[in-house]
Image (tube, rainbow, N blue to C red; front, side):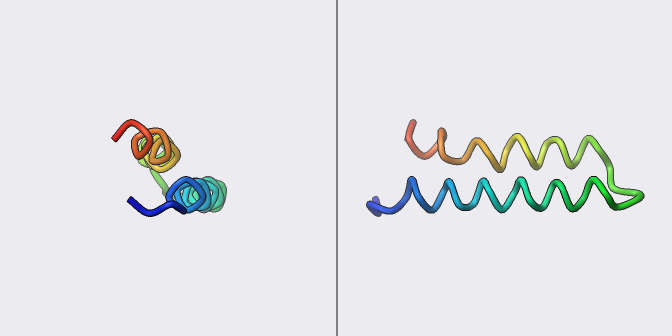
Length: 51
């Protein structure tokens, strides 16, 4: 496992949050899909630590 994994997963989660903020301003984007993306994208760090 790479030693920079916690930093990389945190950066990934931050990018997911920014993407979701962008998507919530777009008409026609499913809120269910957006919420699922937010939950799954921000849990990656916890899942990596668990593994």
